[in-house]
Length: 171
Ligand code: SF4
Image (cartoon, rainbow, N blue to C red):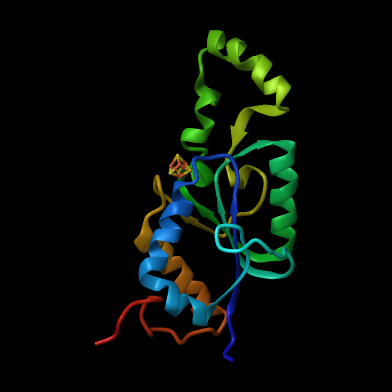
C-alpha cells in the first residue's frame, strides 16, 4: 500500500459549514482521497479517532474558551502543519462577533459567558498557535482547499508534483 498523508479535521466554535463542504466534496473526491489520505482523526467520518502523529491538521472555527485553547495546543503539538479552515479560524469571522458588541450588549451576555466559562473575546487560531496555511472563505473556498491539500500531498511524497489536484481527472 502506498504512503498516505496523515490528516486530522477538527472543529471549534463555529457553525461547521466548512465541515459540510468537506463532506460534500467527498461526493466527487472520496475514492481518490481514500487512496491518498489516512483520516487519523475525523469525527464526521469515523466514531473511533486517534490523535497521535499527524502530517496536517485542518482546523475549523475560532477559540472561545480554555477548553478550546488546550485542545488546539494539543493538536499543534501532534501535527507537523496546521491549516486554518474558513473565516472563523482565519480571522475570528462570525464567531468573534461579540468582540465588537457595544458595551451594553457585552454586559447583557456576561452571565452566559460566565456560566459556560467562555472568553469575553473570541480568538482566531493564530492568536493561540502557529498557523502554516489558511483556507479563507465563509464557508471555506473549495479550490483553495484543494490547492493546500495538493501542496502537502506533494511535500510528503504521497503524490508527484504536477500530477493534478486530488480528484482531478487527467486528459
Ligand atoms: S467561516 Fe463561516 S461557514 Fe465557516 S464556521 Fe465561520 S461562519 Fe460558519
